[in-house]
Structure formats: C-alpha cells, structure tokens
Amino acid sequence: MNYSYDYWEYEYNYEDNSTPHEEPVFQHKATCLKEVLCVFLLVVSVMIFLLGFCGNALVIWISGFKMKKTVNTTWYLSLAISDFLFCTFLPFSITNMVMEEWLFGRFMCKFTSSIMFVNMFSSIFLLVFISIDRCISVMFPVWAQNQRTVNKASAVVVLAWFLGIALSIPSVIFREVRSHLGKTVCFNNYTLQQESHKIVAVSRFIAGFVIPFIIIIVCYSIIILKLRTNRMTKSAKPLKVMTALVAAFFFCWLPYHVFVLLELNHQNYDHGTLIVGLKVGTCMAAANSFLNPILYVFMGNDFKQKFKSSVLSKMENAMGEEGRTTSRYLSRSSSMDGRASTHI
Image (cartoon, rainbow, N blue to C red; front, top):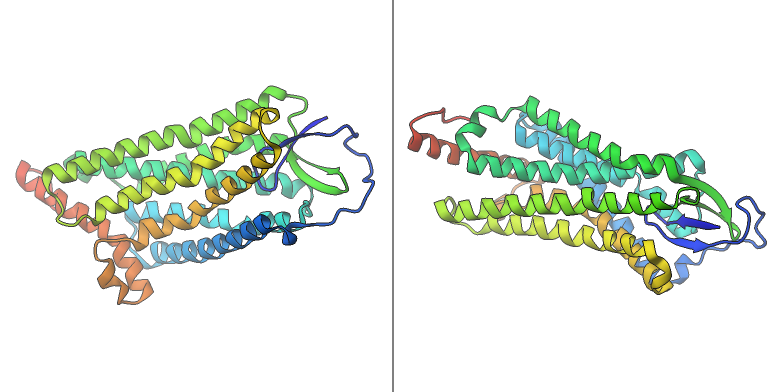
C-alpha cells in the first residue's frame, strides 16, 4: 500500500504491504537524539520558534497597539500575525520530530497541518501584495497618494488569507493518522487518488512559489530602476534591503518545493537523499517566518542611530521610516506635477 508520510508537511512515499490497522510487531523507539542531522534540525527549529514567536509578537504589539493605523502598519501587522501563528504551531512539529511519531490525534493532525499551511501561504501572498504596493507607490505616487487607504489594505489582507485557506484544503482532505511499523504517523494519504498527490504538489509550487517570486522580483526590479533613475536616495541601504528580501524568499522556499516535486518520482532517487533534502527544505521554509520581521522592520536607513535607542523606539521608527520616505517622494512628485496634497 502506498502512503505519503512526513515529519511536518512534506511528502514522502514508501511501500507498506501491511494493512492500515495492523498491530505493530515491535515497540517504536525514537532515535532522533542519536542522529547528528536530526539534532541539528531540532536545534534550528527551536531557534526558529523562539525568534519567530518573540520577534513577531513584538511587531504585533508595536504595529497593532503603539502606532497609528496606516497602510504600512496594516501590512506589518498582518504579516506578523501570519508568521506568529505559524510559529505558534511549530512545537507540534518539533515534538513530532523528536518522538518520530504523532501523539496528538486525528483532529490535530488535520488542524495543525491546515493552520500551518494557511499561515505559510498567507505570509507569501502578503509579501507579494507588499511588493506590489511599494511598486505602485513609486511608479504612480499621485494616484497612490489618493487611493492607498487602510480599508483597501485590509481588504487585500483578507484576500491573502483566503488564498492561504484555499491552498490548505488538501491538508483537511488527505491528512490521516495510522499506525505503521510500531508508531503512529500523521501523513498524506493519496492511496485512493494517486493523481491528487501530483496536482497538490504542482499547484502549491506554482501558486506558492513561481508566481509570487516572479511578481516580487519584477516589482523590486522596477523600484530599484526608478530609485536609481530619479536619484531618490543617496543611501544604498534601500537597495540592499530589497535584494535581501528577494534573496530570502528564494533561498527559503526553493529547496522545499524542489524536493517536494522530486518526491513525486521517489523511486528514481536515492531514499536517503530525499529524506535529508525534505527535512532541510522544510526547516529552511520555516526560517522565513522569523526572517520577515528582521528584514521588514529591523533593517532601516537609520539603523545605526536606532540601534542606540530602545528596542521599542527602534521598531517604531523603522516601521514609520517607509511612510516618511514615501511621503517625501510623494511631496516631491506633487510639486513637480503641480497637483495633489503633500500628505499621505
């Protein structure tokens, strides 16, 4: 019988000639803590959880309760909530990694997997919408000044979460809990619909990586060209931040999707290589949840000056920096056009 089993949400097929409910013939013993790779990934996952949980919680507190509600703070707050929820459910995966079996029942198998996918992909789509918003603000400053509102930004956030929910539906349908080789596993069961495995993997790759990456890199390429053409900034920091954003997205998500696609034809590849690749790819994808607050909040043009101030002041100034920069650019454009107000 063909199953798809994972330690988080990657696909790994294996052959099992036993019946799904057959009693185990031996007692399962976890060996994760005896393996170098598993211990390394465990330490990294715990660090991702701690940094992502605390970092995003701090962003939520500042952008949600300490700052005036604007389009920019709406983006920051929504992205932080998405990454925060993702990190909140990481302990389930970490426990599964250590014990090498699922201890939380069928409902939580489906629920945690679905929630984590909702937040993973809503985060990706929010990055896309932030990129589009920044690109529009630079390319069409007068129009953006008149049309960018908190209500419209909130509607876009709802759309991002809706798309994330849509991509998480397969987890609700295919996730199951079974006993296999003496242990309980939470896995994707594509036995009855073999083509579904390929459809789910390919659709997630296209919708969750290819299209977002193309949009992000096009937007930031346009922004960089516009900034250089208009000599809008004397500092290279904005260009470095934009490059870091694109690079982080690419390197965090590409390994995950590559090995998920390779796993579709697992019989053609080395078993051990697939396992290692899927585990490392999953861990790198999770790392994006704590990189987002660092790249979007803590990196600013006045980082050295803000570093000397308190953490809260540093975050508030960094998040407000983009709004001030956009305001200065809009004001400059308004003066050139002889129209539009000088306020965002």
